[in-house]
Image 1 (cartoon, rainbow, N blue to C red):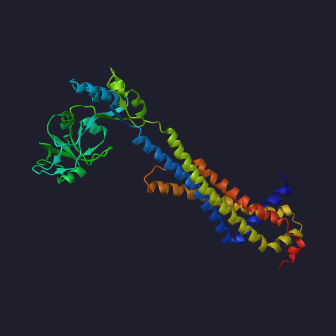
Image 2 (cartoon, rainbow, N blue to C red):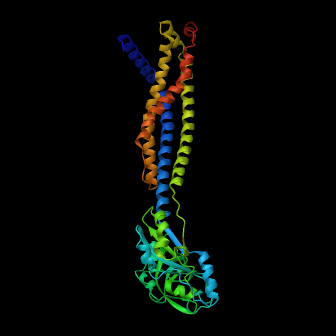
Image 3 (cartoon, helix red, strand yellow):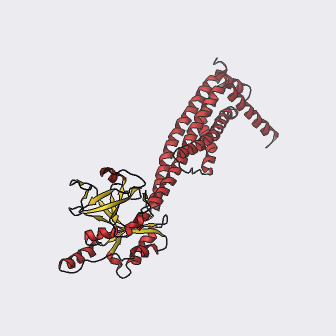
Length: 406
């Protein structure tokens, strides 16, 4: 760059600084508009990315680690026909089903459960009260409670492995039966059919909601149903390991006849997670683009007003020998400086917004540094685009008419 070119660049910078300093309020408002628009765009992109990561984590945690194994309905119908002709009821799950399931790599817990059909022999009542209470009965093993991650106010869950007449009550079931929830339920009983069951604890929560159920030992429930044909095995795996475990769990339980069992389909949700991320990103981008267009129009309108207000000054510059390019360069420079400053400020605003929203929702903030480095570039581009028409309009002003404009 020659000395003349360097001098012109310095003069241009001085002119831009003087013009922006002379109209500080206008400059501050435009910079704030650019900062808010770029900040909103970057914040929406950051928040959508964080939300997508949170959704993906939730899907992986709640969907990809539970597998249910049930009896194949086709096998059930054929064995029912055999039983009707005098054959013994078929047993579909081996006695060591839980041990077989937990021997599979990546399986953390497994257990059986069976819903007991409601009839007169399984009706739930308060002791000595003939009125039936609408509480469903479920038979379960301790392994099922572990796989379900059910929080219990009891340390006697192991009794579900026995044939003793004991029951765990869900919190809403206890309320229906007017049984107070306490750490020591000794002395409280319910009647299931003709049999009294001792309450040994209460179920607060679980991956599968058992709040409305009365849970009895699995063996007693199978005896009441006369078969384990309606039983199901709940398998909890390591996070994200549901799909590979689902592919081998039937063979692990029934290596002789795996076709007798059917497991729940565990879908690989990577495509769904990617779709959620893409759609949230597109939504955020459209909102930010709309705000940037409005900001661009705001800057352009402000500069057009500035051109009209500075017509005499522009004419004087031209009369003193300034070229059209030199005069229009001042407006290009103003737009670029406003855009850059606004973009830098917007990046900071966007980052703070992402962290604040993530903290408020107890999310882990996902901040891509490259995204926020786009802020100054985005702001500068917005300022240049907004300066295009005012800078071109300046070149059309006649020096002679401009000097006499005031």
